[in-house]
Amino acid sequence: MALCTRILLILQAFIPLALPEQTGYTETDGGWHLYHYSAAQEEERCTVERVDASLTYASFMQQYAYKSPVILQGITDNSEFRTLCSKQRLLQEYGERLVRLSTANTYSYEKLDIPFREYVEHYLRPQDMNALGIDTLYFFGDNNFTEWGALFEKYTPPPFKIPGTSGAYSFGIAGSGTGVPFHWHGPGYSEVIYGRKRWFLYPPDKTPEFNPNRTTLSWLLDTYPFLPEEDRPIECTIRPGEVLYFPDRWWHATLNLDTSVFISTFLG
Ligand SMILES: *[C@@H]1O[C@H](CO)[C@@H](O)[C@H](O)[C@H]1NC(C)=O
Ligand SMILES: *[C@@H]1O[C@H](CO)[C@@H](O)[C@H](O)[C@H]1NC(C)=O
Figure (cartoon, rainbow, N blue to C red):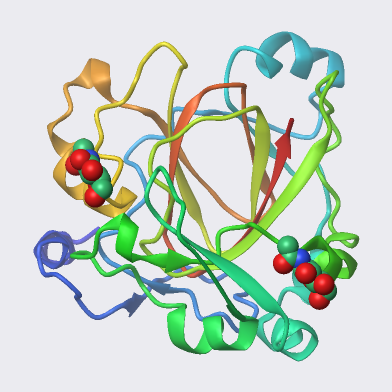
């Protein structure tokens, strides 16, 4: 990266509400326009292991299922589902259906039900850096399976099951710089259909330093740079065609680098 670009990026990180700019990211965006906040950048070094489709179920169970996050590359082909998730197709099929928005703080209680079209037209935008998580509403899951079931049927989930659990989908669309702050729950998978999503993880015995009322973006800008090396999270950015697996009770926070369409499979 040229020095002047880097300086510009650093400057922009400190200008609240800097205009979104388009990245050089060239994958198809499904009409979602992957507008990108300069402040929402990929990590310098990915510290989550990446494995390809040759990973066997036995190796997955032995090396990762109960021990460590991992990114699985190319294990499923969701190109048909991706086509159905283009902006035009989703608005056409689901524009008038309701979506349930949640606040972006760790303990999210406030909910708002609005038509999907209204969400896309009025709420889907880059994160306001000055807003608290509690004042920021997103479509982050909480799906009505009666209304969206036909779409989810077209999704192929990752093939590796954890014994004693069953999967529940969580589908969402959110703007650049949005994300869920640190929290934990059971194991699961996360996949982006369009856009990129940066992940921050800590093992269950290492509670991260964070304010549950603040957004992931404000944590990234205000806390992360000052963390000593040993307190840094395990992190990586996933792209379409990759699935991140997180084990039971691992702390995690996410940051959508672009406008992102994503789906998680929670194993409970
Ligand atoms: C889900 O959608 C159906 C069909 O429109 C509706 O009857 C039901 O109340 C919705 N469920 C919730 C929890 O909103
Ligand atoms: C988060 O917000 C709640 C409700 O406004 C407040 O009671 C709590 O003290 C806040 N927590 C922190 C760590 O700022």
